[in-house]
Amino acid sequence: MNHTQYTLIKIPLRELIRNDFDLQLTEAEEINREYLVAQGDSLLFDQIERLRGFRSERIREVILVTARKNPNQETALRTVLRQGFTYNGVHFSRFGKSASQGKDGITAFVCDSIFDELYRITQMDIPVDHCVIAKYEAQRCLAFSACSLIHDYMPNIVIIGEYEKTLPGQLIKYVTERENELVDEESGKTVVYQAREVQEGLADIRLSPFDGCGCHEREFMEQVSAQLGLDYNAVGVQVRMPS
Image (cartoon, rainbow, N blue to C red; front, side, top):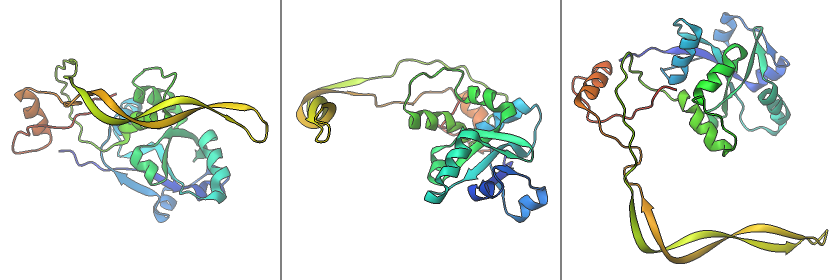
C-alpha cells in the first residue's frame, strides 16, 4: 500500500489580512511558522498530478485557509471567498471544502492556472443549473477525502436498477406543506407562506435496502487486496470512482 505523505500550505485568515491578501513567504518561513501540513492520498491530489504532468510530494496548487467564526473578520472573509488572494505571486481562488473541513473552518483555494479544469473534473463535466448548495458542494468535494488509490486497473462495471420494496398501508406521521396567509402588521398586506404541519395517516413506504451496494468478481478483490498489501482477499470495499 502506498503511504506517501503530501505537504501543502495551511495558513490562517489573519495572515492574509495582515498582508492585504498578497502574501510572500519563503520555504524557511513556511516551516518556522508551521504552515506546512501533511496529508495522504486523495482523488484530488491524483487529478492535480495528472493536470500537472509529473509527480510531486509538494502540492503547490492548493492552499488551505483556516477561518474560525469571528465577527471581526467577517468582512475580510467575504473578501477572500469572493476575490481570492495572491501567494508568492500566484493568484488562488476559492475551490470548496469537504464536510470535515467545514467543521474545522477550513476552505481550499486552488491556483487559477488549473482552477477551471479541476472544477470541471470534480463536477464530472455535468452542468448544474439548480441545486442545494450545501449538498452540491459536499458531493463535489468528496475528492478531498483520503483514500487508497488502485493503479492501472479498471474493472468492467454494470449498473442496474436498485431493488425496491413497498410496504403498503403503513400508519405513520409525516410532514406536509400547505399555503397559509397572514397579514403584515406594519404594511397591512396579506402575505402567503408555506406552512409545515405534522399529520398522521396511512401511506405506502418505499424502501431501497441495498442502496449503494453491489457484487463483484473474485478477480476484483484479488487485484484490490494485492495493491492494498493485504495477505488475504477482502470480501468487500468502499469504492469511489475517479472523476
